[in-house]
Image 1 (cartoon, helix red, strand yellow):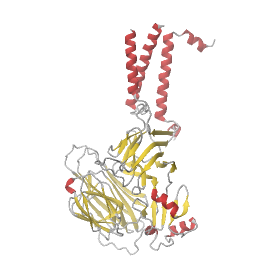
Image 2 (cartoon, chains in turn brown, yellow):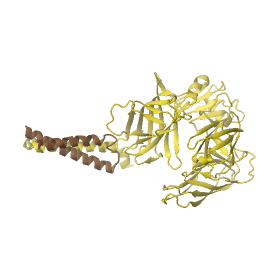
Image 3 (cartoon, chains in turn yellow, purple):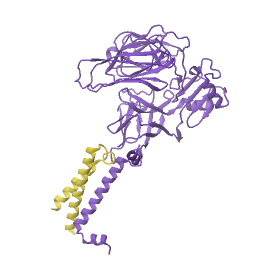
Length: 58
Length: 496
């Protein structure tokens, strides 16, 4: 179970990383297309907290 | 067991997780692309006050300048005129319906609220549409209503007409009842174009007009031309005080139709302080009838009209004139007020308007000087480079001044004067326990669209707030702005 949780948190980390990269690329191509709807700082914060969880699980 | 279920069962836990997150990411990208393309061509963007939670930047934002507007999250307070805001759209649209919900804390000195959409960045021209006109709202009940449809409101001071068809027929023939001097003298309009056949039957041109004082920035003027070949000669001086491009566009209109247009592209990328440059432009043509033609000069404030030759001595500048020669000057205007502003403290001092002295005491601040005197007023400036504006026309000579357009129902309008009829394209706001809802519609096809943004303006003429004042007494308290946009669908863009 604990192994699965570690796996899930790592995969979530990858998902957030990919989402961030995609959102930044879309913002670079079409400015404000993401930021108008969603503040990427929130996602960055969640990504950072998730990264801490992944590190401490290791 | 179907193939898809077999496939799912065979997958490892990690693969299942990755498949799930991969599909979720693709779904997010698809949603973003949907809202970027807006394939059905319709979308509504809204902004509310009080604001509970804002997940993103939003689409309606950048209310400025900060000294005229306060956004504390609870309400948007407009305390001085005008206020600008941006509407971000991920693509262009053709039409917009802007609805504003607000509490009105304004007095009788500020009876009008208008919403504008920036049309041209160089000239700063806005397409203004009414949100509220308290003068019309009041006259709607005190004057006789001849027509009150969605498209038009027609009011008459007395019971001159019983049928709107009779009124329209007389208006078209130019012989309205109790209006011996013609419709332009007794009809006032608001947000309505009244075509007029202004003519001077015995007009004999004395001397051609030659500009005696240079003018700064965009200008529009009426010129009375005889049925003859004509020619306009301009000399422009680009001061090159900024790095921006300074194109020059001149349009000549006959009844709102462009008959001649000319452009000089100005790729002014020289550094600040570069040497000024001179550009010449000539426009010519042949007019088919004697009458009034409108000339529109679209230039930035970095460009000066240094000379202008026109084959007519009847020439009036519309609504605005900005002499820029730093010398004494006499002008004439038909309006009962002037709004003045200078950007240079050197030009501060007294202005004599209609025989009365007014003091222009502060740079960058707009002053409004009003006199209660009918007819043409003389305006004496001891120093110029002062921007002057009103709802009438300006001319360099008394004889040259003429105004072919009817009076407007603006904040200086007084019922009971020469005006016997009012024609307006205006719907009054809906009032629900003090919360007013007003809408304005815009054609966005020719609007200025830059960096994904349209620029709007909220105008409350006469609303001022001095920065040294502790309290705000007169203000507009906005609670909601929604913009309903319509444009081409994806299929129309692909196939047409």
